[in-house]
Each structure stands twice: as C-alpha cells, then as structure tokens.
Image (cartoon, rainbow, N blue to C red; front, top):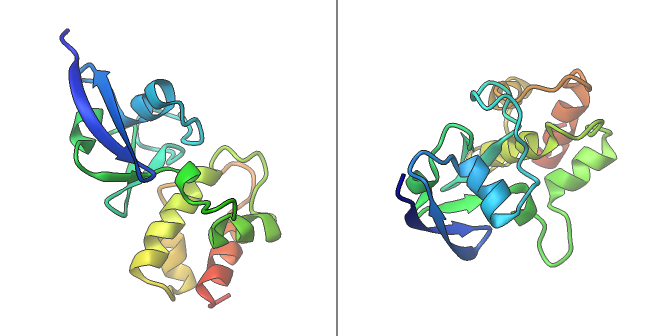
Length: 155
C-alpha cells in the first residue's frame, strides 16, 4: 500500500511522517516519532491507555488514524511538563499515590486535563465520568479522583 506523508504537530513540535493510510495515531506516535509515554493497551478503544489530546479533547489514539490528525494539535503525556517542571496533575498523581504500576497513568492524566481545561472546578461525579474510559487495575480510582480533585481545588 502507498504511504502518505502527513504533517503532525505533537507537543508543539512539527513532524513529517510517511504512513500507510490505515496506521493509527497511536502507532505513529510510539513507533514513528518515538514518544512511548502513550501506552498501547487493548487496541480497541476500551482501556484508555492510549489517550492523547487532539485539539484539547481526549481521544483514544488507537481508534484515530494518523492521517486524521493532520493539521491538528496533539498533546501526549510528554508534552505536559514545561521547562523541566511537571504539570500540576502529574505532581498530584505522585503526591496522592495515584500511580502504582503506571500503565494507565498517562491516559488518565490526559483525560483529567481535558476535563479541567473545560471545567476547572468539577464535582467528584464529573471527575469520575471524565475518567470512565480509562481502566486502572491497581488503584481502585480513589487516589486518582483525590489527585484530580486536589488540582481542581475541590478536593
């Protein structure tokens, strides 16, 4: 199959990548660009490990084609830290013990960021709804919700 050249803007940097038309954004981010913070879980859109932000909205990158991201701003977990400083959500996940094995953490943090960007002071129910597409087998979600609520100033 013929590859197609796409221009991607990921974490504020421009990339030009030749991809097959069926290649997912997830595989492009991890394998072609080398940003491995975005995790490959179920590859079916069920677990949320591959969550990235596209134009500020949380997206399962395993369900989005790389060609669909052309001309859009994509943020991965690597793009949250600025000038060597972790994002407040990253700090809170550490402080509140919301990180155990860490596999779900990048997607969970990006889903939380999308929520807080849209609704800076969510209720606990709104937080739980926002992360409902992100599965965690380790934490039971309590510490994750506490960390997000703390950043929102409602915890």
